[in-house]
Length: 130
Image (tube, rainbow, N blue to C red; front, side, top):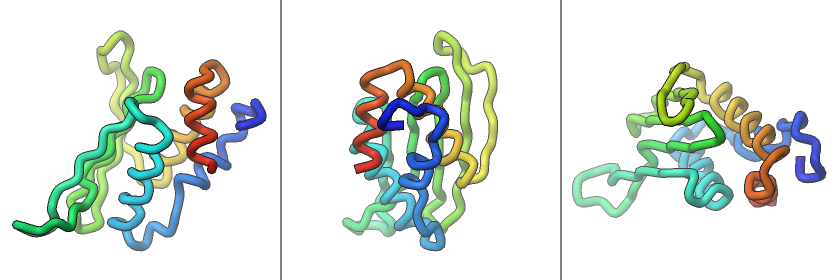
């Protein structure tokens, strides 16, 4: 991908995957990677785990890639709800529920496709991989 092969998105998907046995840690790592690679295209919401706690956990990740809007919601206990919405001119035409692994794979695939046509997206992919 970095060398111009948009069909080979596995490297990006692998960089976004981690040991997801600890969902909270995985979501924090995923959110940090996406925030660093796609500034302005990622929104991350973090909330305190307990009342008056400074320890915050990721509750929502929203990513815009091309015409797709990816959303991951976490209840804080390890359960995640992942969706991909296809929008045209701001109107959602299709909303699809995905498992976490499929969500990451689809996001990586769309990022790779975007990188083939956009210098900004190509640079974002390089940031993810380094």
